[in-house]
Length: 245
Picture 1 (tube, rainbow, N blue to C red):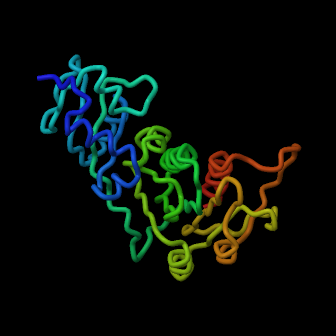
Picture 2 (cartoon, rainbow, N blue to C red):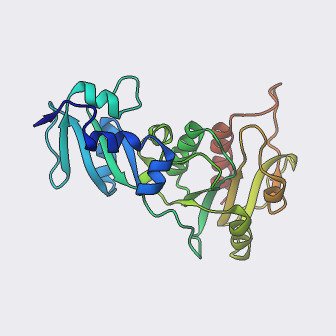
């Protein structure tokens, strides 16, 4: 059987997950694209349902619903949808009492989902211990963030929690908290095996409250540009810090 109606209840439920409110209420999110769906399954993500075009084979052990091209267009937010979309259970994002040793990436009010996803992907590639987002950052489980992360969302822990509560806890646990700041030193502070790299919002940087908990670092800029894209800055800082560990 192939679903051809965009008004089908299962189709409407999947499409609703484009909205943050629906994701929060259901504890589910939508992933789009052949590679991302396959990567999520291979990574052990809890895939509830796969929506597939009729040319695709059903997945063993996972509910597979076949849909027409028009229905796939309705479910997906991509301009050119591929063959697969899937409804996935959102992993637990509650902050732990004790954080693992390593480099923790902390995002303070980062608003662009593309930057959030790219930072998650870079953190995964470089071997960071996890990513912590403030509640007012972009949703890492939004379609745009998931596409930018390219499967890395399922490879490392993703936490969402108040930085006001979390940063003091990290410091007590021996973490060195470092953030980029115009008032910072151009000398990178001493790096330990427990380091938190804090990346601020694209327009305003980290909040004053967050900066007060961190060692401030100003990356030397030899050219005339005043700043870097948040994801680019995060990548350069991750590499520096991991090299110093």
